[in-house]
Length: 105
Image (spheres, rainbow, N blue to C red):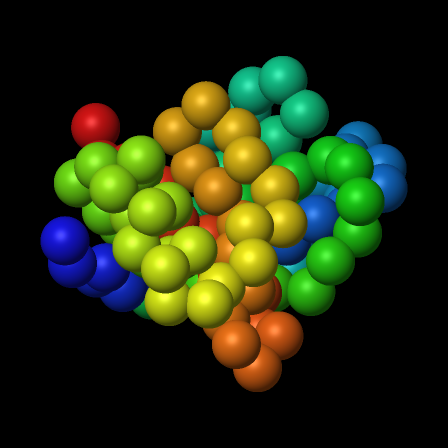
């Protein structure tokens, strides 16, 4: 089981439409995908995911082959799982830093 850093970063926002206006009109980022409660931008060297919900600062994302195996390993390593979705989970390392792990497709 290996966690591989990727070039994805997620940011939580309260109001997706207001945030889209900022990222598209003020920063000039190119929208590459829009889904229910999220927008995805090409931000140059990284892909920026704007997710509607609880606001949070940028969260680095790791890719894993098997989410359930990653979850077991994180829990065994003393991490706290702070959020889960179908193909990803947010976790805190032992110092309290939040990361996201997403299962490869």
